[in-house]
Length: 273
Image (spheres, rainbow, N blue to C red):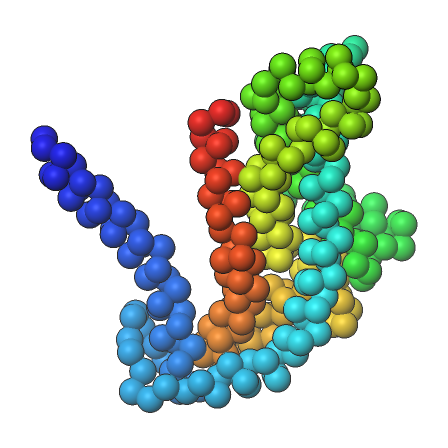
């Protein structure tokens, strides 16, 4: 196969993947622009664009307070989980201490255990601590769930870092803390950016914890707030779609802002990992 033919095949595959990714988004957008109360089947273009659905979704759904609650949770979860993941990954990736292998595999249980299996006991534990219906009921479990993956991610990066950097730092008298923050961490920016972006995505889209642990409407997060558009016998499909797009907007903005570092981190992980 010639180079031109290979390039054509690559472009065709990329276009197919783009269509597969964008088609659900376009479908939701067309539904969100339909007339309120209309029945939509498949990908149907609206006869008239009803942008008022977004204003109605924002007002009826109260997405101002819902997104504020999601932002509060994400602002605490993302930096805390990222910092803990860096420290744990640095310890497991560059240090050798008694029981390090066993502790690391014990931490990886958080990656293989079904999250849904822990929600019910987690509810009773947090209720005993009087933490249900508080932001901590969402923040603490999300930090714990995120650190398992974050430690695995950062450990892989630190294992792939040149050992000569640490050896040179030790010869210069640098402490363990200095070697991390002054030498290794600047080279880990793409990996850290990717990790923080994933943490924000997971935290912002978390639905099950908010549904089970939060009953107070003032502390309900944006994904859980979509249930307001589902009635006992009817569903406001246009309002539900408009609300889903409103919730998606911050994730898109964050990704567009951090996309260069995110892609670099993913590519470095594929090469080094």
